[in-house]
Amino acid sequence: MKRLLGALRRAHREERGITGLETAIILIAFVVVATVFAFVVLTAGIFSSERGKETVYAGLQKARGTMEVRGGIVATATGSPLTVDDIFFTAATTASGESIPLNPAATNNRTVVAYRDATNVDNDVAYTVTSIVGDGDTLLEPGELMLVSIDRATGIDGPPAMAANDRFTLEVQTPVGAVLDLTRQLPTELAAVMQLH
Image (cartoon, rainbow, N blue to C red; front, top):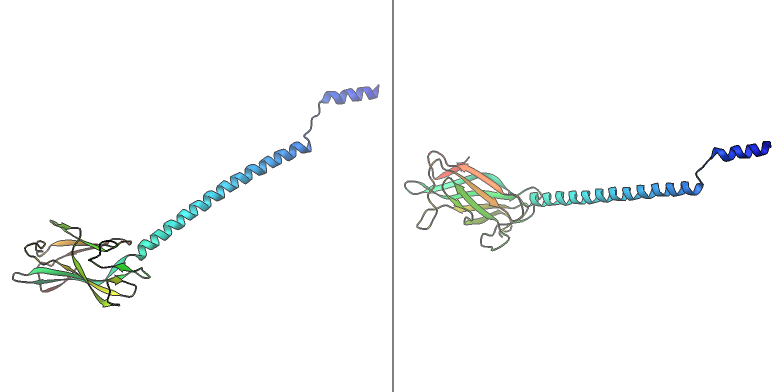
């Protein structure tokens, strides 16, 4: 009888347990979900780091394709009364920069110089380039120095004369690099040669 009562008590307890197979299935499900999540996170991280690298390289290319002014900007004037004939500045590439095309006669992939003042806008000013240090071509390469001359002489079809105290901006737009803005003001009294500030 004791045995029968013991068997009945055990049957009434309804002890249920988890088997090894169920435990293995749950463990495998957790591992699979964690693996998929890790793959998604790593893929997103790699993708964003590649995009960041592309952005850095694009910025470097733009910075390396930029030119800088070496020295001052000079204006010359002739005539009676004096009128501004030419504006000069010396250009070089930035440190470790790439070559910049300075051929004003080119039809594509060329540097454009724009002129603006209070009353005039010319988005493609005629200019000439003279090599000071370099191989004599119109490609501004690292280590070279070029003199850029902008003709502002007045004539029948020429631009309007620049007067004393006139403020103007030259905008040098290279094919790849950043735009170089040069804003200067003529002195209160014109002279034959003027260093502009």
